[in-house]
Length: 375
Image 1 (spheres, rainbow, N blue to C red):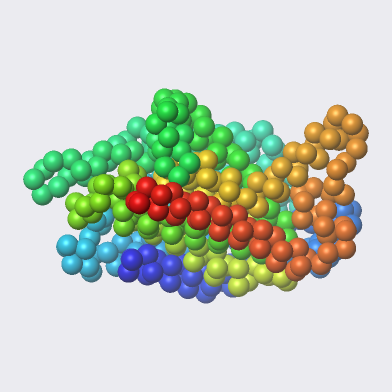
Image 2 (cartoon, rainbow, N blue to C red):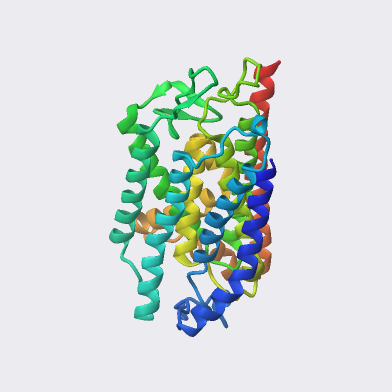
């Protein structure tokens, strides 16, 4: 627990203190977010020139905090240490965050360079998401753990991902093979990255929602760590067959802390935007969290707000292409309410409440499943 707390604190401080530096640097480089002034959105007023690509800060803060968390682990007595060396799990999770963020960075860079909101074309962005999902999906499925006990016997041969679909844990009857699991994970990466990206339309909206989702995964992973099948000190029959849950909790907590530090500067009126760099980075990490905690099918509930906003876009496109009519004044959904007269702050706070409800329901389902099997 100490390592997780250290990681959260370090990530928060690095993000909080470094974001003002990033604001000055990006402003000096004239890396302002291009704003479409023809949409009639009140939230766009006065935001022209606001620096973007702020996601670089909390991605970097998460990586630094991960290192700090591992340094904290080395100060613990040997009997309390379950994982000290960096693992494949960390490589997958941090890799998803960094390389998904890199795809977003290219998009942001092109927007800034062209002084246009176009950026990377849809095909290029999807290709980047598919490539990132495929590479880390393969790593997650084809590299098992090699943990051994004092006698040299293997205690954990789990991979980061699983060949079966999962809800609160793996569902053995739904085995999709390794290739199928990689394909599904690519879809999850695409869905999560685009879901966070679509939500990132108002000051602090995506950042605050991501804090809740990442905090939920930190709790889930730490609970799995305390009831871990590979822990020789855990004697109960009911346990979680996952790989490196402490690593997962540490990274999720670090990312949540980094987002809170960033939110200090990103809340209305935002002094910096996360850009596609941050949105795609967070989406990639959230997808990795769902895979590594074996909660793939629970993700739509934990990230309920992202699902609702994504579906508003899907519904709008289908309706317009089939009937020529729009269901919403504008999509994504937050802009529908903005055109309906809601203030930006009201929309953000109310959508945060929706995000919190989804997280609460998901955590309730997760814990109730544990209670049902322990009685």
